[in-house]
Length: 236
Length: 184
Image (cartoon, rainbow over all chains, first blue to last red; front, side, top):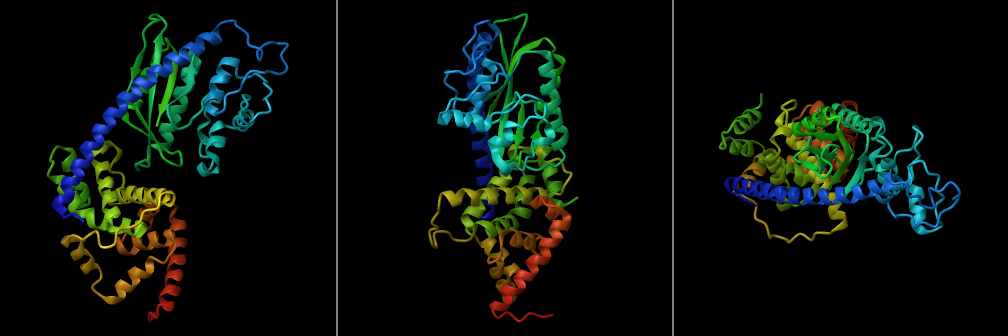
């Protein structure tokens, strides 16, 4: 066991190391976010085109399209195929998973977070009323592609609710999640910007805590009605 | 304002030496508290260090609305519980006698267990359920209010009250089995 002076030195050294690791991780996250944004941009472009897949076809009752095998892919799948598609799941193991995580888009829908995280989270997400095009999972994933100012407003509203409901506690959180807004300005189609340094901390019960940077970012995004094709990437 | 809070405020304002005061005030109590869960002083010390690094890395997270002690113990509770969850998956085998307690910590324990009865009480606490042990420690060893203990354990004051009653009853049974003469 360390003496008090050694302990003090150790705490400072540990802090320095952690800060260095965080900086390094942040750089990796930004790179990953940029890569995801490019991929999801391609998905969005594909979606915007009139190209019909068998599942979107009016005559298609069933589909042979291979279904993705997790909820994140389900989101991407829905995004491409159209969220309200009544797609019959194939009788595969992957298809069964999709059924489990599938969420309806009728307003009263069961929320994907509850299914993803089971009872452990005590349905604590209910009160936030997340829009159903948002999915949350660990790892680096795209939460949502924002393709209209209305959706931006909705995201802003949701995150603001999270902030208002959860900043009073003042306690620390175990899981740290960075949210990066990446957007393509409609006037500058080939440019994008990652706004980093914004932090949303979510603990194991999904109580959320945010920093001032994040609040500022939300304000900035809310003001920017020109922002389109914004993707929100969550990295754990 | 507690001495610890005042010292931490000075540290945030730029007085780096003030953090040493924060460590002096809370270190031993925090290690002692975490050790209730992890039952290994080295790991408890490591987790306590993690709690203090939180104060350095994320100074904005603490908004002075609760006492620094409550805040630190909340983090400690969180980290200890997480550690136990993880260690269920990865079993650690403690190296017997690998660690030597620092003289300061020995002094702290010596001061705490001046009487044999208190030592027996401390040992019996380890036989209690986690929640019972935690609540009794916070209320009787750290002398926290029910309100602060409720914050640390993320429970309501009423739940803390109930827990204390049940924990005391459970402790009484254990002590009687150990041959402790219980004074009514």
